[in-house]
Length: 125
Image (cartoon, rainbow, N blue to C red; front, top):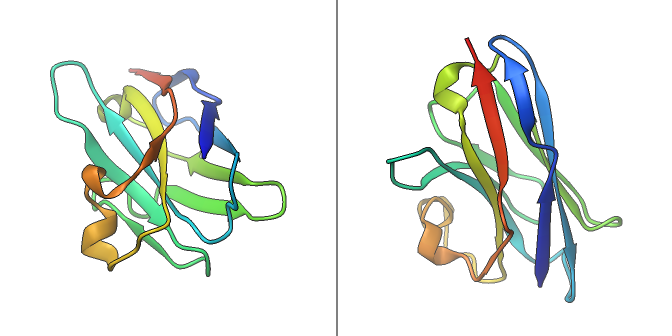
């Protein structure tokens, strides 16, 4: 699976941004997908994940503000980000795996086999 993330940019605090991740190469619908982010000087952290059925899980820091979704026909993963703040500034990565062992598993970066190249999100205060 090849993943191509896009949609990052500069946005003011309180604003919104939508990220996309186009998947190709293998069957997309039976993979679980996730978004992670990494801020300068910080560890990569989990943001959100979605399984093939559409069930989702979010990090507490983004719950209620971010929405992850997927289009299994177009093979695209989305992340709608609302009410952005400076703490959301990071490089955002999409990831995929066809091995799902539960939601705790889905929150760990090493659970994913495929990664996109990352897209920068900068929130100005």
